[in-house]
Structures are given as structure tokens and as C-alpha cells.
Length: 128
Image (cartoon, rainbow, N blue to C red):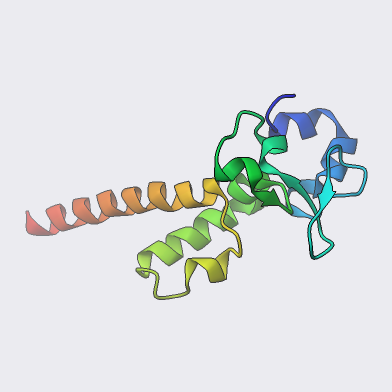
């Protein structure tokens, strides 16, 4: 089995619906869907990324992690950028995302590095 990709859903509208239309709840007919202790439908990381190891392999996803990372018109990126700019003072990261995915955590790192570079360029311009 291959790792999940957005192209899979683009090619198959039934799969798109089963995966919750990019961020919604999984449907009962999603292949390899399970139910967690709270009765919510989920898939384990090994289903999303078959070659996953460690914590990602056992992580439970209740919505499509690709939609969380890349969807929502940049909502995730905007929220992470705001959080990073505030130095984490606006909200605790876990308040923004109950279970941040690996992609969301990596986005914090990337956005943080970009914001640091922008700030350094701004300071250099002011100093010259």
C-alpha cells in the first residue's frame, strides 16, 4: 500500500468523501478505518505512511493529516505564523492543535526560520 496523497482523492471522489473532504471526519467505509476509545473514527499512522516508524506509526489520525498540513486556504500556516510571531504568547500550540501532526510541527520550524530571516533582513536595512 502507498502513502496517502492528495492525488489519490483528486482521482477518486469516493475516496475524497471517505477521507472527509480534506479535513472532515472519516466515513465508516474508509478502508482500514478504526475506532478509538472515545468512539471516533481514526486511522493509524502506518495506514497513512506505510514506511513510518516510531511514534508516527502508532499515531491516530481523526482527519486527513495532509489536509491539516496543506489545506484550509493556509489556515494552518497562518495560525502557526501568528503563534510563532507572538513567541507562543497568543496561545499554547496545543490550544491551536489538539494533536499537532508531524507536518504541523515541521511547519512551525520552517515558518520560524523564515520569520527569523525576514526579521534579520529588516534589522539589516534599518542599520544601513
